[in-house]
Length: 379
Image (cartoon, rainbow, N blue to C red):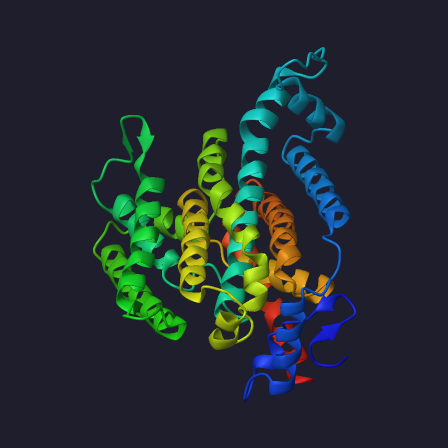
């Protein structure tokens, strides 16, 4: 069969929606396939397992690289020695234990969690908006978080309150507030037009960006802390940061993964999706809420790291196909591994100094999308 099916199963390709949209024949074939429940392939548990193992190995190797080189086996032993009911004789220096457990492993863990969050959210946004250029920051999350963080960094707001860091809280509140504002502006009786939501997000992002710039202009001349946060990084990562992000990511990930089949159906237009039994309005609200919450929690502790939510879903889609039931979890694995490597490059390439991680991801992401644009145009 042509148009709707390829070797891996059902194809809801973004390219078919360019120009005048999907051909009616392709729509009818996709509809028939979903209605009849035709088998589109076995869930790739083996692929996911291999991916998790690879990410774990990358994390171990990254934890051993730095000004003080530590063997990977020792890194594993240090990690295992912290587990309950595991007793290992310490054969490594105390300084190695401190470097690995208190400095490197926390930032590797946070990088993996943030990378997975941004990648899952990016895949969800791309499927929901049926737009391959959609990313986790599409409807104002980044600008809202940036405004919240800038307020703390350039004003006299205390950086801690009752032992809790104010900066990530302000960034989280700003991110969620921006999304809620865009949603409130776009919400109309009878539904939530996605085009209107995008435009509202652009307007909210522009407003938040303008206020952020104004605060930076009127602040102390030393803007390095603000710029460093806006470009992202994990220099101050702690284990408790990973725990907080996971508290938000866990429920959000469950929602996004459980809606994989719905996202496949939503690649049709809304009328066909409704005919196939999908509550489109509810699906929009749930998916936007889950993806935005995961993104807000991630950027609250990492800053604004671009391209992860774009690169990872596209890489998975190019290699393994567009079925969202496997695309979302595989994108999370690829995003986690990618951000661990990006963080490793950021902290070693100009050692003893450290680059913002956002610079590294931008150097990777820009050429990747230039390649995609040329490939899509057939150049």
